[in-house]
Image 1 (cartoon, helix red, strand yellow):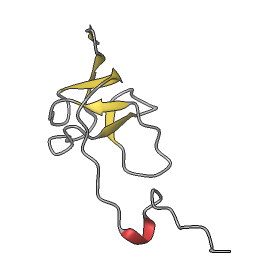
Image 2: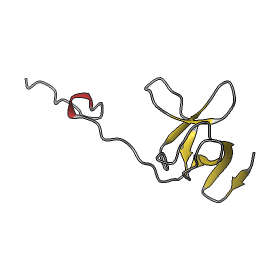
Image 3: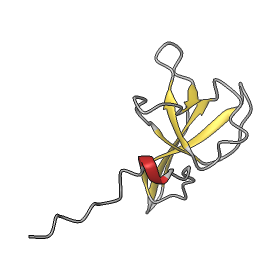
Image 4: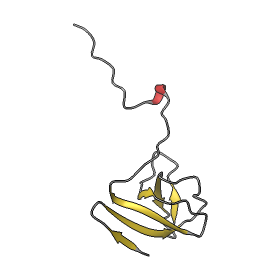
Length: 91
């Protein structure tokens, strides 16, 4: 396991537990059993960091865990957008 410290970020290396070639700049989690990196795929998953490369299963994944990084997020449908705010009722 490698660690990289720079002025702006802390990165770690872990083994990819699945094909993450389409998950670059997305959140990843750790597999509790193996410590391998998996893609975050549910609302209850606890993200470990943001994937910086595009490894296939068994290859080394580079993850930023602290600091600035690019990220790629899925678009939210308007019906589930938790960022929107309803205006208060008028008096």
